[in-house]
Length: 168
Image (cartoon, rainbow, N blue to C red; front, side, top):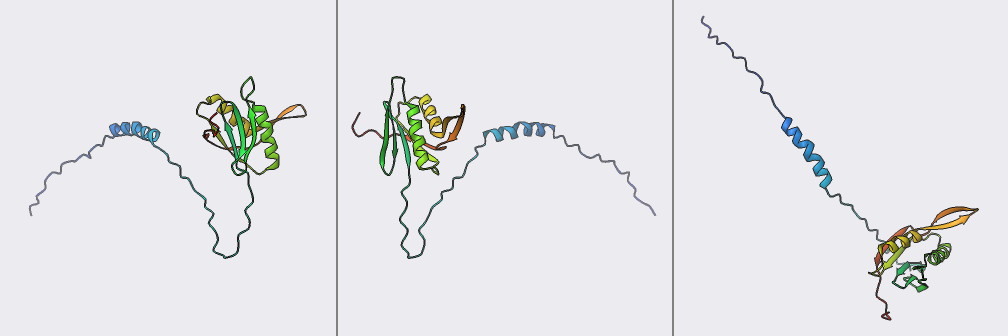
């Protein structure tokens, strides 16, 4: 019997060189992470009326605090009741200490209230905006010779002030 024996060729496994691909990934992955836009979902909580036919209880009047910073004064008001206080500017500028004292009195009447809306006229400097926000968020009080910081209205919304009706 004749066997047909062919000498088998030794086949070497192909070498896979992924160095160039790895270099690409090292550059591409950080670039994509840096340029990615991360979106934040907002959840709106709606309180819908119940299905019962019982009359609803009378809603409590709550404070909707609005602080309007104008070029010549600061107005503290309630969206439901109207203007609570008007603080004119002093020779040094805005009277932020008087505003802070009035906000402390409001906080004493409404201790659970945490939010406030700040409304600014278009020509108000950014530095004033920051100073007003600081005074609205935190109250500084001296107790036994030490400066103590207390929370006033830390949840702040910022918006544009409505033009005055008197045209001033």
